[in-house]
Length: 231
Ligand SMILES: *[C@@H]1O[C@H](CO)[C@@H](O)[C@H](O)[C@H]1NC(C)=O
Ligand SMILES: *[C@@H]1O[C@H](CO)[C@@H](O)[C@H](O)[C@H]1NC(C)=O
Ligand SMILES: *[C@@H]1O[C@H](CO)[C@@H](O)[C@H](O)[C@H]1NC(C)=O
Ligand SMILES: *[C@@H]1O[C@H](CO)[C@@H](O)[C@H](O)[C@H]1NC(C)=O
Ligand SMILES: *[C@@H]1O[C@H](CO)[C@@H](O)[C@H](O)[C@H]1NC(C)=O
Image (spheres, rainbow, N blue to C red):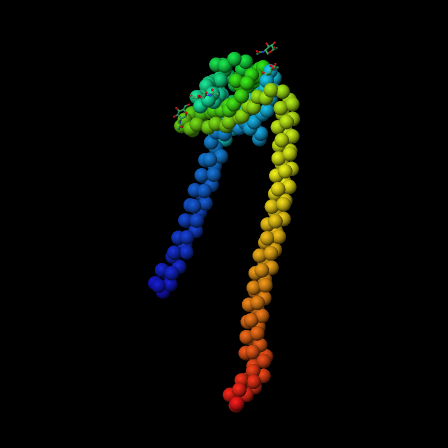
């Protein structure tokens, strides 16, 4: 009886362990989804002509909510991060007073639906580069979060067309090359497969030959073998 109980006990201990693991996983999942998230949208780059006015999009999201969220936009000028603007958002829905450190910059997000986008007026070639949208929520013990947006300043639309044409041409060319490569590969694979099959057939033929001699033709072989012996 005692032996039986000892055998039963471990499975009883099992489920709580699994449950603990599950809870741990859920807590971890919740914790990671609670963290602040900065987003510059699905397309994190923009190609624009010099002289035009562009918007650098950014929004933040946090499940635990924000309090005194510090945010900034930084421009990566040849390796050194230049502050474009920054501010502290005391709570959601409050329009913050934003410090602006760069020319032709306007804060247009107004923290409307967590929108902290900025507008860049009359862009020049010096504005070309990477812009980091940075956020830090004190509720998260000073963890840093950021997203990067790439602004590409081009001379005229013609350049855009050229790049587009190049892209299309290289895509088509690449596609054709890929197709040819695929067909070559396919032919090669078929060739190898055929070779392998040939080999296999050889193997099968030889093995079936052995089989035949051992089974089906065993009688005749047995007949033929003894005959030389008889001679
Ligand atoms: C854009 O740059 C080109 C070349 O520097 C210049 O000729 C042109 O006037 C500029 N366009 C605008 C709108 O600033
Ligand atoms: C970037 O910095 C390096 C050295 O600091 C300098 O040689 C180079 O000219 C700079 N490039 C630009 C585009 O300013
Ligand atoms: C942008 O350029 C236009 C026309 O050159 C000018 O009127 C406007 O004041 C400029 N805006 C800024 C913010 O520099
Ligand atoms: C953020 O605000 C700007 C200016 O009002 C608007 O154009 C843009 O669509 C907004 N972005 C999002 C994601 O709501
Ligand atoms: C967060 O960024 C600030 C600069 O804005 C830096 O001083 C700090 O060390 C960073 N913290 C972490 C945890 O990376």
